[in-house]
Length: 148
Image 1 (tube, rainbow, N blue to C red):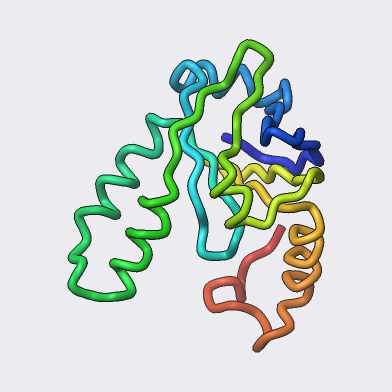
Image 2: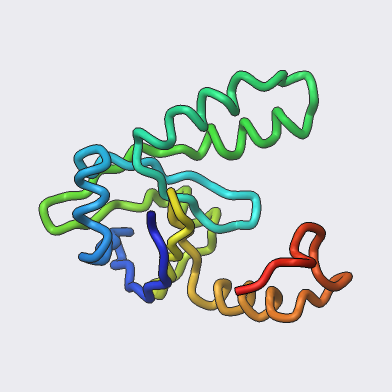
């Protein structure tokens, strides 16, 4: 279970050091073999390979006659990139994925249970600000009785 927010720096080659607190779990969950892909919200998704494979199979088994489904297959499946943590716990983010998510040097890694989201830090701040107070139409359905 991945949770928490980490502010990180990506070097000019696109290398990103995974925080130490997540490395052991990622190594245990598949020897540090991961998949990095695009998300429609313009962030990147980082999955342990073992968790990604059933998602990919399900996505690609959907009927591609619907242009919206085909678009998601192209986006999520097409951008999917196998990455592996090196000995220093770093991964390499491809130029195509960096461009897609408009990643700068300052990035934010956000734990989301079984995966991570990787955001440009400025875009993460904007996203977080929009999420506060549910400005478009109030509380989303299903959260009326939700309490922390």
